[in-house]
Image: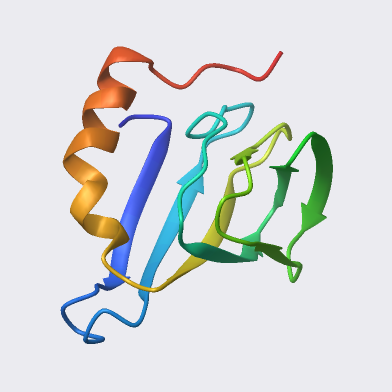
Length: 117
């Protein structure tokens, strides 16, 4: 995906569908997956840099060490508006988020990440 890299650490099959864990790394000044919602709860832990998160209609900067909880059904997004690479650990509950990755990868192919506006 170029400016965004996703690494799956644990998938739904490994957790009997209870959770999925992934890391997302964004190069400087890179938009994220775009505003979206899904039924799973998302917990984000910022590993490095500062990630900016959208939850409902509010954007918040989250520096390394921050936790962000997005309940299922809430529209959300994340992006790296900073001049440094940023990474976030994502835990989705329940699991099997990764089964949607082919569709997500296709979306990114058709909508390449851009510098945030």
